[in-house]
Image (cartoon, rainbow, N blue to C red; front, side, top):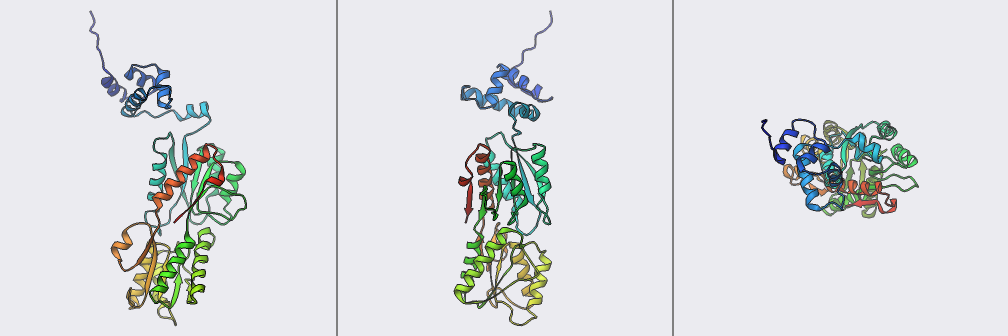
Length: 341
């Protein structure tokens, strides 16, 4: 008489893990019907929470991944969020912090991320067109928003869910999460004036980016209110390399009437400026002071003499993710606009 081999759920799980896990193999391991497993993984409230937890635990152990093609045919959704991300080095930890925030927002949902680079010399509208045309995602998040951003125009026309990190000047409203760069520049100038500084300068983002205008407006408002001398750092921007920023300030000290107070929109530019001024014989807190936007703890650790104003990129990413989920579910745009400070 042939021997009968009896397997429990755990041994079945281990056996199934050697191949591709399916709803059927999960159902066998859980001793449930395939339809019950499918509904449990879809978080159907008619299935008991105990059963849903057990099914999810078995699916996780098996390494189950849903068939996206089948899901898309059945629901018309991809369960994918597309993120276009900056590649510049100026803002420390920008990409990792923002993505961490987005993934926090998506935790516990069926959504996954695809990340595409957003090149500095273009708005990457082609990538947006590709995602929309081929239905590769249910929604898009992107950064480095321009005054009249072609990605925003395209997505509004296509009625495709998105949230931008930054505002535009379109009359048609759209979802966004932004940092209050006006307030940053205004407060930075106010602090430098309170230190007794007499001439301020600021490094701005590239002019085509919307937050460059916000930062300039805040700076100009502050210096005019204070009646203090100022200049704009011409020839360098937020996107300039550290070497370019260092050389700019080293050279500026060799010219008449250099500024004695700097506003930097990022930690890299602040450290580069300090190096250039140090090469010229100036000391931080002596001949000059700096207020910089900080997105990590590095600047404060290396240069505690720098006044820092913190921008929480993880909070921004989480807000972007939550707003996009609401937009995908049909929420009104007027409730999907957030300015962080």
